[in-house]
Length: 435
Ligand code: LLP
Image (cartoon, rainbow, N blue to C red; front, side, top):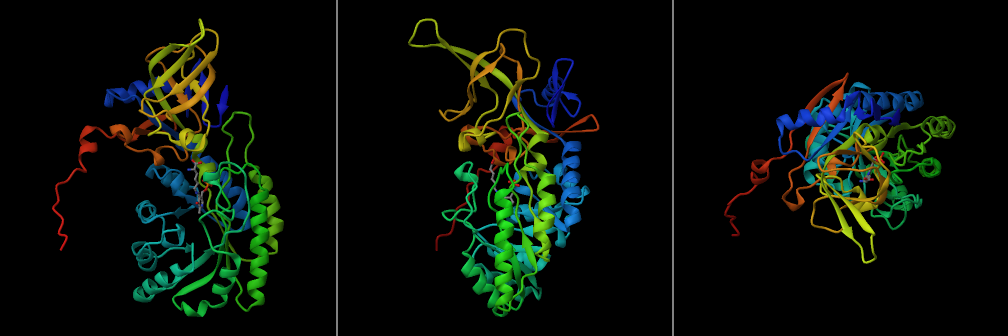
């Protein structure tokens, strides 16, 4: 039986990439006796999805840059690179991570709305495919660094297309209240005035309308926006050469099978982009990795709290993972299916599944039907490969969890959990000279 692309049930036990999760956790505990949870990713699935993405959009001439912010684990970067993807970085840290994993200059796309001098210098000196500029003032900074480095940097202007995508406010980026991008009129002026920045090639348009889109319509509207603006800019004597359509391809978190229609979108894009003979870039993140990861957690406690009414006890399952590890439910009211690794026989009853962090928001799911669970049992939170570990923190003095990969049936710990020494290591006693 397969629950999602990434997990299956073998002889009654939940498995990732063919490795039973109870045995995986026992193996980790031999290295980390105190582990209460860990991340596990199926690298073969990530590579397969990366190849599927390439098969859909490669024939359209799309240069796809995997969005590192979704999950920048080096082992994952290596697999998406093997599948032929470039890298999309949102910060200097991600640019450096991409460089370390062998993504060449032409395979590095730089995003971000808080451009720093260090990022501009990296782009100018080390080279990038293109920079997506989030406002016009940024062009002067990029120009200064490109002039100093004697290089030429390609720039796409991020245009806020005024497209509402629905979904949680925090992942919608293309509507007019969002902080991202410039107005279309500002972009048109900058393209027309691009001779002002002789060390830049300001010939691109970037549109990223939002994340976790399950329908292609907003993305297709963005293509229409790009087409109109490209025509208008050409009419003003400043033809565009590059269109970057961002990411946003959503996945099914419910198990109902509702996925972003990738191949159908590619087929429609073929027609839409036919009228837009420009270099093409996309920036998929979540779609590549979400299904391929689980957050595996041990049940620390099962608490039954008597309610005000007679006999109605509320069941709380307290896990060894909390909101500091996977913040999506607390931050976006996101849902991740919670599946016992080795389900016990017995009736499904409601449970509120929580973490150990001292916050009322530290709840993964309320009143979800689950079979009996006991202290020490394992559960998996599914589809946690994207925006999981990368968003975790040390809140409540908790070390970040170990990360394991599976490939060809082999289990590897690719990142150790942070122990007490790692948590203490940043403490300093540096006297600062305040002049
Ligand atoms: N390009 C840009 C400019 C972006 O800002 C993002 C994501 C992507 C590409 C990749 O988007 P994707 O294909 O993954 O949807 N933490 C949130 C999602 C935030 C997305 C941020 N930007 C979550 O957990 O749902």
